[in-house]
Image 1 (cartoon, rainbow, N blue to C red):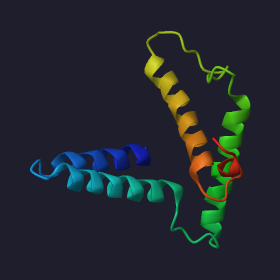
Image 2: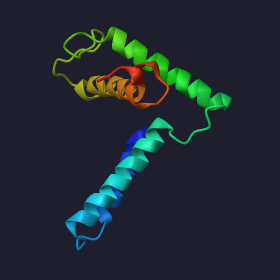
Image 3: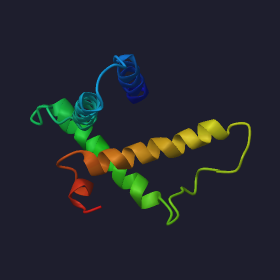
Length: 118
């Protein structure tokens, strides 16, 4: 949920930027926002000696590995029903949560998956 809030705030800031900026300045600002968001999401500046950070990194690693191992060849998961229905949004949300787990596993430096070429 925190990521959704962060992304919403980031999007709001981008949309609130003056529309009179030239394209190069806007591109540079967007690149800066993207880099900051990526650094935040991957814990780039986190003190990796802290127990809480190490626990978080371990959780990222375990979650990503579990998601990868249980993912089918077509990118789906067997325990998620992808058929249309009244709770389809909740089921697809679980799919996107797992994609996020994988993305973090591949993006966070020091994770085993981060060393795998994509």
